Amino acid sequence: MTALKVVLFVALLVVALVFAYYNMEPVKIKLLGRAVETPLFLVILVSLFGGFLTAYIFLELKVLFLRRKNTKVEKALKDLWTGYPDRAEKGLKSLVRYEEFVPLYLESLKEQGKALEVKTERYKLGIAEVFLAEKVLREDPKRAKELLEKALGKNWENLRAKRLLRSLYFIEGEHKKAVDLQRSLVEQVKGKQKEEELKILSSMLSWSLREEALEEIEKLPKTVSSLALIVSGSSEEKGAKMFQNAVEKGLGNELLALLWEKKALTPKILEVTWSKKEKFDPLLLATLCKEMGMREKLEELKDLLSEPIDEKQGCKDLWICGECGMRYENYTPVCEVCLSWNRLKIKGGRGNVNRLREGSGSV
Image 1 (cartoon, rainbow, N blue to C red):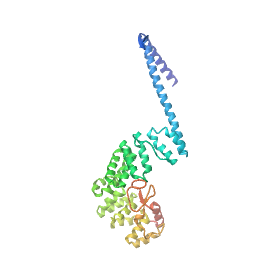
Image 2: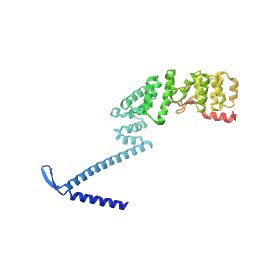
Image 3: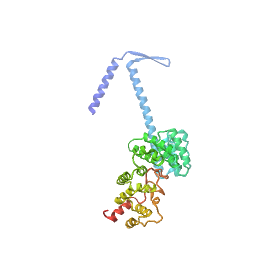
Image 4: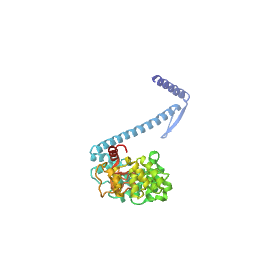
């Protein structure tokens, strides 16, 4: 490597000497009323050196600025996450001209119990509005919606704003707006994200347009909502086959409970349920047996339950959000608390299924 550097240096030196030899003729340079004659090669070399020097100084100043900024950020983050929000506020206040740091600055204010105030009109990405919307979502959904709409008005590509706003629209019954926004999300994302957004679109259409969008729903990835719609609208034989496939994919509990809510259970579906009962939550099965008057089946399940079944309890008492733990009386594709989609599960879950298997041996 050293030998190569020496060779390159010698080569450059030779080129420079040859260039100087062939460019010895003088040229006249005028500056501030004075004229100076100097060799052409010297003028060119000074120009090149001056250009490189200017670029070097500019880059060094930029690097120095970035280092100072990085030091400020590191210190502010350290203070914020180690319990010194007042010190973090001072450090982040000088960085709020960059919108990316606004959420951290507002977090430092929140930790001190101060009002979350920032001039959002100075920013263009909608980051500040989304952060504020998330903070006021529970207490003031109307203001949260306004902030999110403002964020998208600034930056239509803001995925976070779109996801929050589509959920708010859906919860408040503005289904058309929610679907339109969801279609935009589907077009905007790729890969695994696209698959998830397609599932949400499927649930939206199944819950709002229902049979009107059945042709489109059948082409989308299946969710509990869309499966319940398709199964309930199919022939008894076809519906039972689809139900059995859903059970094999781990959606049996939720689909069974939702079909019960929709009053769409058929003898064939119940037959599949009992033939695959080891895959279902015993509390759900017991509840269904009680409400359908299937006393013999209920007796078979009593020893497998982790707790006695409440005579007043119905299927509506079994839904729980797998993200935040919120309980629901009836199924909904979106949790109204954490805004997660397709996360409602049957309360007993896999734990009761394991207890069923252990208690019943081979079924």
